[in-house]
Length: 616
Image (tube, rainbow, N blue to C red; front, side):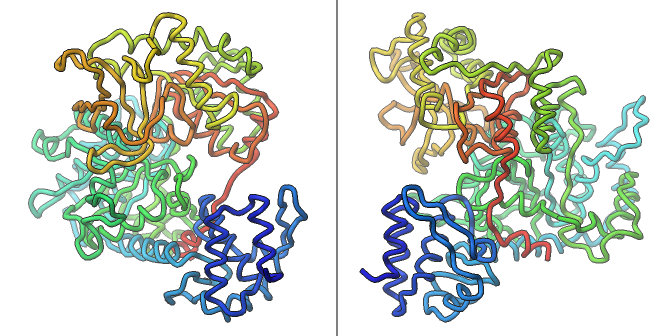
């Protein structure tokens, strides 16, 4: 074993590197005769960090830093200039555009595949951003805005209605990104955006796609659009032209069983005039890139999401990177002027805007909450957490005047089932008493336990066992077998043949049409119900409790957030914010104040070059 190999061997033996990271580095070492330890270290780290959600490693940030290796001596990373020289002459490292296992772009080192994803996504988004509406009937457009976005009679506000600005941006640009927290009017806006675009269209019927990353997110989008259509001030023919069905992104692109490819791609683009993606923060770089490449140049792409939520489970923080405008002025002079003429909304001084239109005119941030009042503890707490104000957050959870927030000290593990009993029997018994699958879904989805961790005394696995024991002891379920009536499950692995996807939730019930046979029912985006014998399901798990990560794309009337009893790196501001904003009416937080405070102060940033590609 060479001295150079000893470095990564030590990292692997002390579990700093996974088997994949280690073997990848050794493989590249065999392709490079020099087998320099600086190359092996860089290769192993870029693989490791991809597994942590980063699309690249920034060598300028890593150079000279100390890697703390549990159970071993710390490792000091090489100086930047020396590291770059070694990588620049390696045959396994290419420059941007070279087809090599690794790509060095300035001081960022990528796996080729992720450099390519990032490059193609940036190109596609910038091209859409530069695509603008060439002409329109200004009077017709203004009349549409006045009718579709009517002001209340007593509304004398001077604040900008950013939902109207978002609608104008969607009409004017090939790309519009609408970011905002829960209740800020994203789906309110998108229903009106569609009505506006349909009214203004002069080239026949528009082909529109509504999509989201998961089945449950697609269902929520569909239900929200359906509800918003009822309130629209427009002709019935316009309402009828708004789609009533949403799909997952995988289904939209046309998943091919047992293949990473899709039927729709750059060579065979999607046949839509408008594509709307909800919960865009959940979409990882690879899927986002594939979707963007399948969009035609003349298509309008509208993204909805909350940039402050947790990033995708897989690598990338695409929505966050897109919305990270830095200190760049918001809008171009022409956008400011045209927006005022169409909507009456004054969004800035046209003399002070950026000189060139582009991405600047495509990003709209919604900040006003139409769901929560000023007396809402959930809203106040989410704002404090998002701002990183730990002292304000602690004051809010201690404030007894907020009836929608309840803080409870974390019990010892052996006391947890007793403390949970009342909450469980009150919230998780109603769905067990109905034979109607749709009613069961409605009742079950009113409340959920969210946990930060999967394992440990306060993790999802242990909590699900505790819930089942409580329900069993109270005669509400029969756990004599694994499958029992009322058991809720979440799919954890995609099955394209069954059209069941990671994150889909099902409820086990007796099928009265099949002699009371136990089947697992799933609610589709269109409100329909499908059922399967339990043995047909892909990988799944019981889901009385779920991780905060898995809860993305869902909302519940009431949430119980279970914090761990000690700090872990997974606890971040984004995670706490995401957990709080899953609750619509009430949240209970069980935890320790010092750990809650540390979580708010810890913010995670994923390494990526997308932001610079879009904005520099």
